[in-house]
Image (cartoon, rainbow, N blue to C red; front, side):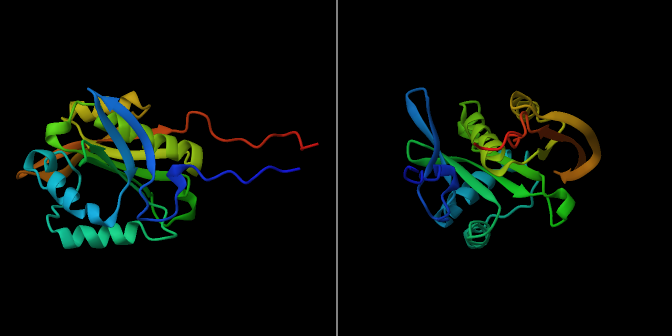
Length: 207
């Protein structure tokens, strides 16, 4: 006789505004909680990414209006969307954001996802980035079955490159003059991570 149907893991909660915790760790006595992003996190996105020191390291356009971020979060967290948006909280404050996004509409690229991460300046080098990266990689490996994760990072962002290497990303190439930053065209590395143990189907039929 079959037992009760197990509850889906927190990371698979379908309600876009749910408060489900993906993971929680301790850092210096403070809990670091990684959860799904909510629409009302828009102000935190503006605060973190609007910091000039943080923005200089991002491969993104400047978006400093809360209404725009509310629209983005509303769209990305809608039922049926394949994007995964996470935030990290410490002492009740959002101190980091991260996301996984489909690589594009091509059927032959369904095995790949794009990864992005951002940590508030005052919270960098405190394990926030590692907590977000672990949650993203665990989700991609165990629940999506993504075979390839991709990202771009400026070549002079040594801290970010070290973080990505820690989670299995390797540099696959360098993009010359990739983006305009402060009036200067700068290079970026293309980095990727392949699934360390791709899911398999048991060859033996059930008995």
